[in-house]
Length: 199
Image (cartoon, rainbow, N blue to C red; front, side):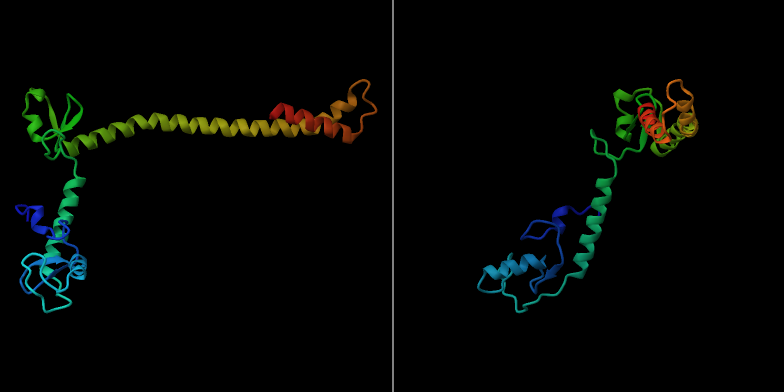
């Protein structure tokens, strides 16, 4: 499978990997849709490659080719999802400890990495993950403390508001010259004080 090139899996009409390939009696294969559109443009149903006439209006699916194409596409997707070296297009299987970067086996042997230390990339990834988790622990603790302080601050602010709400009207009544203040005046004075103080 690896020795075959992409052109072995390409439709001669669309030049892309076969989609739902069908086979003609002459043994040439095409995408079902490509063959249909080719035949709509022609007077006779003929093979787009060898021009041999086809007796069947609905050619059979080329199941073997379909399976091969699906495998090829899956393999191509897996190759593209793997990280490759930008210099050598090889898999990045090593991690250079000196440069702190992933490298391929060709990079390892190059002059740029002479006398450098290397680790398998999986091992280096585990080590970096462990170091990150360790450095995150103090930050998590600080966050927990900050959240606790905020909760206490909010509780204290609420307590002050409740205390002020109860004591403010009595304080207003006891002020000299404010004997005429009614409870409703004190309430409106408190609401004004509450908004300006806690907004």
